[in-house]
Image 1 (cartoon, rainbow, N blue to C red):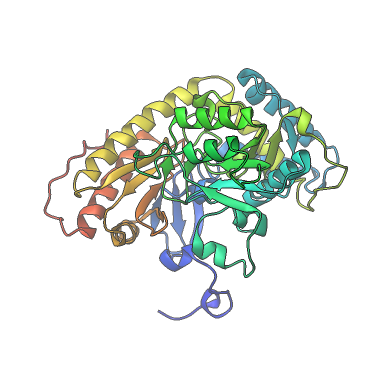
Image 2 (cartoon, rainbow, N blue to C red; image 1 turned 120 degrees about the horizontal axis):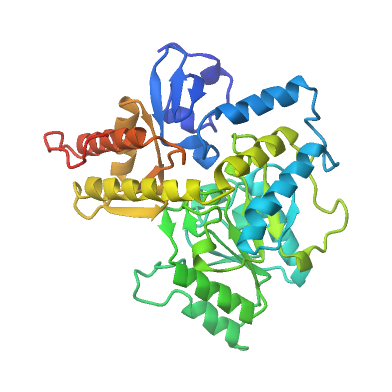
Length: 428
């Protein structure tokens, strides 16, 4: 294949296009098309930034209309009608029905920006420096976020020591043999432990990059209760698991907890536009004006699509109920596929789920076989041992079944079982 400008000019730091060399030109719903017209089923969804699929027609038309009327696109943190409408809609549809009273901060527009803001705020509020995070966590690629990330390859990229953070065992890290919070509880209660009280603990309810480890609701509740007793702030990183990806708008809702700080990004705009929120309890709003800012924290196109996405999908329970049925179908399909491989297991929660293989090389082979069959999906975990599925929440049932069928074929091909009969029901 002849080289092109991507190979000759773009840095080798790029990653996804190394596995998916196609040049994608058009996208709609759950599909993308290449320059030559080849159609791909997308179970990647922009790493979870496209929960409602590509180019949702109503959101697309809003963007076109807003631009046609010369609406303000860049506004720093100044007031605009688009920002007002988003804040009012977020309050009415998301916060009030869930009895959540959060101030809304617009940091820089990516996931790592909201994590950096959360860490900085926790330290400012408590006057303490240390942050606890979890084994196999991933929170972003800037220095503060890397300091609370577990992946050794990503941490090495910092080039300097990553300090003021310690890692503690995530739920089931010891395979259920040891209660995972026993160490934390012991050192917090022992004045002779030598462990300084942290400012905060940051946690993902499902570790998206860390291998789709999903915390139990009772574990999350126990963690929240423990931190409250010791006046330590709880930060939930909902960048990837939030905005409905696990079945509820916030991934922590089922645990019945009320985090002190919540990090939101990826699909909050509803359209793949750059946007992030840092939510925190009102009593934590101790910022000085301009103490944390960013040039692109006022993305009005994202405010426009975000407000409408909330109205379209979260104004009542209908979308959530429809999604629950699809989640059940996905889980059932994955269980049947995992049964083809001895000791393979289904991981994750909701539409942030996949299969963990005992041989770490298998997942990469499965992803490559899926790509050959015109389907996009990625791997996850410290050894890339997990196939990770993130279809659009709006996916049609027949496309969901099509994806499961392709995945089964890919697993059989990758494990040398192509002669095995299908265990999946055919698409409706």
